[in-house]
Image (cartoon, rainbow, N blue to C red):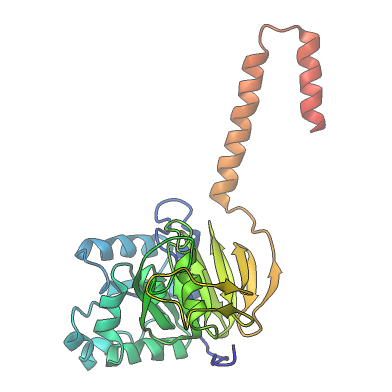
Length: 316
């Protein structure tokens, strides 16, 4: 994008929410790796959440299980907290800053324009992995969806924008995208501001942005990118909650293994990701069980017929 500041050292993580925490954990594993792996010093910021210490305990357990050297919680619970230089200074050594889900408008209200937000920017500038899940994903961009409704048809006044951290320039990020049917509201935002690149992230999926503009997709779902460069819309004239004219928008649906250039707004490549060790193990076990089921089912049939079935199985 023309507005994007390229050459930044850090890695951005916009996770669509509901990321796996018990089994595959591919998204959170990627975050720990980007934060330094066994040397990772991760700060969890749970300010958006209405939950108490338990939300921090979950991420501490997961990140430590994935090999992070240290995991600390830093929670500004008001704008006054976020103005405290001592609280902001607790991010000085962080190699990863992870913001949890919850209420993104609450998170924005507490931290934007404060020393705490400056500390997040500083962490990103020195190479830290910065981002989060759900609300923590929405806030990384210039413009953040404060709230809105779901639905497939873009409509006027479908959502409202607020100010984000501005680490991802010229974009707006939506989360729980496919699961909560947020196609319409992302289209409506791009229709109203065609220069913005709309990025919708599915659950258990991350849009990982390196070098300021190189997006890679990790996880179980997809990232949807809406480009309004050649868009035609009546958003400037539509009344109240009327359906919007949206014509000429370019939509990219990017599953895991896709790489996309945000500046050029083009697909770079797609490589089918290899299954992780746990998935491969489950698939092997399923194959063994299917073979056993065939053997059991074959009992009682003629040896000649059984031999033919075995030969067919060996050929495949």
